[in-house]
Length: 447
Image (tube, rainbow, N blue to C red):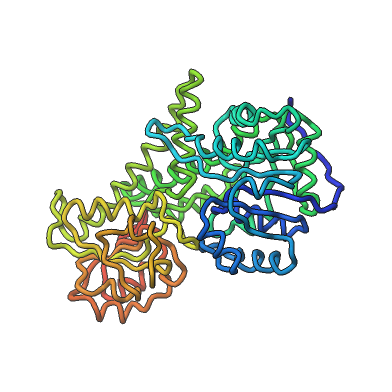
């Protein structure tokens, strides 16, 4: 089936089931309820279901709490225990479960297959099951095989949500992609987006599944490219800010995702980039370009470690006795997600070399979740950003939280044992102001 756009005219509410209440599932369910559909979200975590029914949102995501509670108050959104309960009376069921990465880079489909097996006996005839999770090419067929229901259609509808702006991205998408071998089933899913003014692209399942991976792979490539350019700028004495302005103003290139940093991370780019390489490999193609993108990102993380080591005059592998004050732990601002965070990779390497790390992040103040406790073990956490300066031999800014750009440099300096260098891996601070405060400054690709 070739790609095609579709005009959607129906505004009738549809009963939906959503399996999984992580970032994708909770945002999907809440936003569809916000659009007027009746949504039942199911999860295997009894505690999470209880918290959601009490109005507590377990993740940091701008605007999500408001639309969840508004939809609950209007009676259009409910949370239940188990996939079966979510799917039983639904016209369309969305599978929004994790697809973690295996050791070989491939996506683990066990959760999505388990969810399909759970709903198979209860999903009603004529319903549509939608893969919303990021899944490798062929997953639509895999779900059909598990369901074993000839009276149920399976459709791919990949998500393109950015953590921190997921609600906005869902309600104001650049496009909606739907992949199905059954045109009628695809159009039923398209009807859900009738009130959103956006292009809707209907294509075959394999193309829809490839679009998701290719989009994330391309964005990762842009970030790796600008980080490589930043390294070159440092080598030749150029200013990466001017370079980015110069190339980003070219409409063929654009300025988005051309912001140097410590390397990309999070729940999508690392997993999807490696999966894209693995999918290509499994089908006989060596995706050398994507391998290069991943290699550049690995090098960028190592370069940040080297910058911090150089800032304390340790060019070798020994950071014993060094205290690093770290600002930011999450992989980006606007989320509490620590998965594949560049900050945590860099900190782990610094600690391996013998450094002590004292860190602040606005999402790790107060009682930690079990996951946070596990991944942040060994890091000294403080409740105020100024506290990272206490006894620090170097300061490192890892996450671009807006409050860090406005940090009181005078009070920060007053807490330091002596003037130190700030390694700004996000280029968030004004170098002139940092130097005026009596500190050294080292950014990414900046003179």
